[in-house]
Image (tube, rainbow, N blue to C red):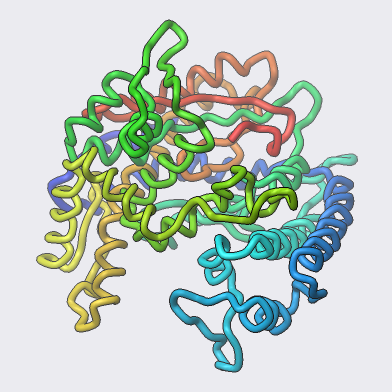
Length: 467
């Protein structure tokens, strides 16, 4: 039996501890190695079909932009898009950003996201850029990167790294499978090209809301802690406060229910704000993450009907600031936590997470205010991300021990560590047992002031897993 190399790993909180971090990181290496050796099975024909599908999508979006603006432009040409948006349509950037050569206004993604509420053609241009990137970054290169391992069986082998990201998160290259765009329809279609053999399914087990739970543990905010102690939904709870909705929540054997909290109008913006606020995103940054919804008909800008009176965006910088203020008013204990992280960064020149992982923050002593602000934001984010990543690594070590000790390596194969999720392939008849074991490891990996919860999902391919 392999010695449990994660033994002795514990929550610290009082300061850096290279030894504790080393035990934590080394414990995850056996499963990391197993993931790189196993690889993910791919359907090469699927990627060939997707290449044509994305090409057709790009042609369709080009025509839709022409109908909206009256101009035909090559949406893959930066100069033509810049001319369309800023000269012909007269759109303005809140903070002017030019190209490196200085000859025109930039049309990078961050610029387009910032002005996506100003005209319904901008989200369509973003869609075009997404399709173009999916095709060039994932669809076309996939067949060249896959290796044949048997008759008709091709696999993609992830190249996982553990030392490049300060918070301890994993990175992946050739290609970056950890950044697969599986939250958009076309991205999920690409992920459907990752398949399993007959009798096997993809099994995903992930921690539920681990970042807000980490904040509840570190901040000890009474309201936030109570939400998790009562097994409530933090995003619906905040939506009630942020949008001043009647509080008719109730609980039955199926869990908590929130009548009056609409998933699209209330819960999603509340979720976006919660995650943005704990990572200190400004109102401008939050506006870029909010959906481009028309206040007249509640349609997305990319699907805005011609019959509507006109595209009037629901979100702007002012009401984004209002919802951020509402978050801190609802959970005021988070502010002292953030101030303590700032104090540590300024006093010591570094911060640490509860495992003892250290991040140097000497940039907080810069004479430039914007450099100091960015450094403090990074310093405040690291303990949250580092703690979440630490729980994942601890579970990876525990699960790998169970696999080896119980002889499960013929029944379950871990494939990828995706932020707060372990993705693997499992024999269909063993899903319930394996998912229960991994879920239990997540929920018992470490003791917090609030409970850790995990959930599982299965599908015949990666793209069909619920998100």
